[in-house]
Length: 571
Ligand code: FES
Ligand code: MG
Image (cartoon, rainbow, N blue to C red; front, side, top):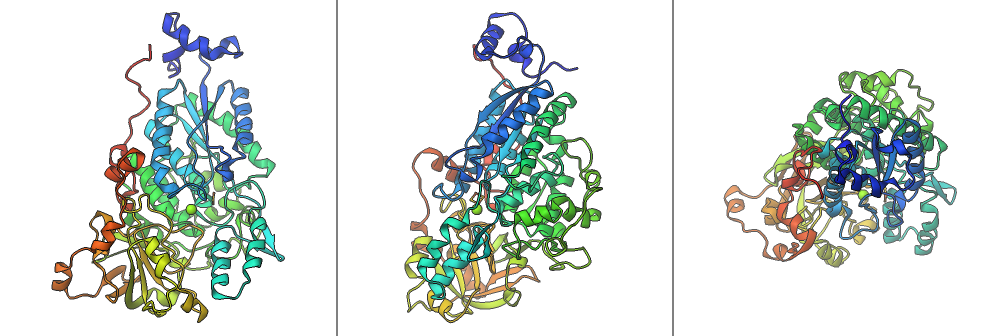
């Protein structure tokens, strides 16, 4: 057997190995430094990331499993991001968390790592960091919360906040009733229970091959999650002995599988930027176009909010992820292996669907084509994405005059102005919300609709933005427009009244202004004053080095892997 990586710190009888051992000993058994694998538990538990607060209990089960298999478990708290709390947007800090996780995995005497995440950005950041270090790594997704109810009906967190608040603005729900729903929204520990970004990335971590098969989607309070955590601890030790690393698991085939699953699940558009960023760390040649090419014709099989009716514990009860994957098994790459060393498709043999309302048969899909469409045109030279499954079919081909907002502040100030020149046919355009412009590419693309149109019963309009939208949101929203306005993208040149032409079937997004006039048009000076110009700290580093959405919005100097080698010792 190869000497363990941790032996670079602990083996031998010189002064330095003495120092490394002595400070770590603290009650560990005498053989702890004699070749047993040291396994970090990268833990995003935090009271300020409420969706992940239960991960300390999960970590204890992982720890038991590592010990049982002969390893030494080491709790490693890492940067955590609470999606609803962190300003200006958790996405600004995803790359910082990924960089911090990467460096702490590399800097420490460990042989492998178990990654504990849940809330939206935490699993992507963990996977990005672990991919760059390429030590044996396995994820335990923290799992969704149980379904809360209000007035006898289930509440989908995220999605129903948008729905109910629109009802208040439309005057069809009293504000006091809306307030009363607040304590019912979050029923238990765990992350959002709709098919938002957290659910999507937890499930895709498994499809990518990075979890013990069969565990993604177990609700957070379910005892089976702790069983799975224990088994993952055992598996981590086996992976270290086998030398199985993220680079062996995260191949082009496993990313293709994730794209197929993303469509069948009706998953979050945020998965596009996260999967591109993870692939970028490994040098896997994944492109935004792959999402359209590979996923566009995959049927939607899962009837979950925001696109459908049910919630995450319904999905698990109905047979879970494996039941979904079994329906589309022929579309999956048979060679893509998982952390077990065996192909993903081999683990699907025993899959059973218990509820055909929640998980549809391939022959009776909710929609025949569910994937994400990537649009190009004079408004989006490097592409923009739209999720047709969350859109109104009648708006997928639309022409209407732009109503332009230079920032979210501008939007909030003018949206409900009775004199705003807007009709149901207008196209709302919001710019300055890309990675550089905001900064951090917030989830604001699903703009609220003008109150006067809501009052007339309008519930969807075409909206275009260089930001993201919450995975729990819905509507005919074109997002991730690249390049963003703040990076010189043409969105900065659009004016209120310009005709916008959206044609999703033709994959086009254009402004219909005569070519000469368009070429001579200057970017909006007002918009430029709304862009972020941070002078110091992380925001400065981020704005100076972040890439555009179509390549994953990672920092340019974080692309690729550095491996687990550390050039110099500390003494
Ligand atoms: Fe944490 Fe939705 S806010 S998953
Ligand atoms: Mg979110």
